[in-house]
Each structure stands twice: as structure tokens, then as C-alpha cells.
Length: 322
Image (cartoon, rainbow, N blue to C red; front, side):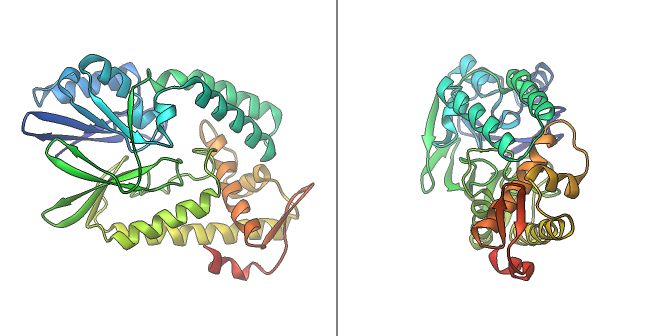
């Protein structure tokens, strides 16, 4: 396996793409974003292994986000690569008009429900329309689901559905000399915590789904996880537990905001938590606040009112629900 680091100025810096070779086959785990600069960089990195897009047999996508799936269509167009993605994310990788329209409609509904002011909402929607170009062209997709396995360049990859960051986020497990490892996409990251709530507004109960994913990762006992950004995670269970702890602390901070400032929308809660935000974080900040408020509401700790969310009972019980 070769780790290919690609620059990504659009979202969160470097992307980690993984090149697998076995026999006469070559495969990529994720592809990087569909900008000319990243495409050129990926082509150059593959050339050092005497490969080009035409010689890539398989592309395995951890999830639909453009910085992971953007070049899949271009690679497939040049060499006919088989592209795999989870069934929940496949329609967006295929760039199906109905799926894209449904996503945009859901985003508009959520942004308004979060209390995002109209100017910020319109600017964000315009920015997202403009950024569609970095999603790349459509790819024909073979769908996978949790519990499946696929043969890729001499490796058997098990599909572990890991929703939260997106509806179809997956980890792809494999056996190595040191034990069980996985390609993790954005399910588990070494430095910052994957966004929930804003990154994919299609996900119902986003914080609960992601908490369950982190518990599953812990239970799997991976020796290493190879993430979609930055370097390998050598203690994945510890990292997963630390992210759960982070969300417990954030939920308590959300309760503190409501206690100190009265009823608040997700947008207002985000402002107290994160301050002013720019770029994609204008969506991620209130999205994460919403994920926590939604979770706390489902457990009876906060109540939704016409003026926003307010504390309903003692927030000391937060620890027991996350």
C-alpha cells in the first residue's frame, strides 16, 4: 500500500488517498477533489508507480464528499474503473439530478430551521452551487452495504457502515500482519473531529448515529486506521473514545449556552460556541450545534420552543445520553 497525500485548498487541507497494487491490478481508496491542481498532482504521483488513470482498475469511495470522490468519474472515464460506494451515498456520486435536488432542498429547509439569517443562508447556498464543479463528473457506481466484502487488488475489504459524517460513510476493513486495520475516510480523524449535522443534512439523528459508529470502531479493536486526512491513527479505539468524550463536553457547553442566554436557535448556539465562521464552516458550525440540540431534545434535556431551544431539566444527565 502507498499513501498519496494530495493538497486540498477547498476544504480541510491535505487528503489521504491510498494506492493498492496486487498482481496486475491497481486500486485507489478515495480520489481527491476535482480541481485541475489536484488532478495533476494525482496523475504525477501515480506516474511514479508507472501508473495512470487508465490503469486504475478499481476505486473504492469511503463517502460522497467531493474531496474524497471528486475524481472518480474522470478516472472511470479514462480506464473503465469499477467504482464502489455505499448505497446511501451512491446517488450523489452518480450525480443523479433527483438526489442532488433533494439534498439542496433539505439544506435550504435545515438552514432555515437552524435560524440562519437570510443573507448568510443565501450566500452559503450560492457558494455551494459554485463549488459543485469540484464534485467532478458522474461515475457509474457499484453499491455496497454493511457486511459486504469486495476483492480489490489482491485484498479482501470488508464493508463497515459508519454513518454520521455522511449517510453512507464506510470503513473498509482488511487483515494485515499486525491485525485488523481499516481505511476510515472521515469516520475517524487524528487531529480534529469529523463534522456531524452539517456535513450531510440527510442524516437523521446525526449525533446518535455517529456516537454508535464510534462505539463500533472501538469494539472492532482496529490496530490502525488509515484516515481520509493526515496520518495513520495507531490507537483507533483510544481516538474514538476521545471523540465521544469531546461530544459529551460539547453537549455540556450547549447546555451552558442555553442556561446563560435563554432560548437559542442552532445558529445562535453556534455563535456562542464557535464565534464568527467563514466558508464551509458557516454550515458546519450550526449543523454541529443542531446535532447536539436535536440529541438533547430527544432525551428530554432541552425543549424546542418558538424562540429556540431551552433547557428542560438538569443538564447533569448529559453524560448518560452520549
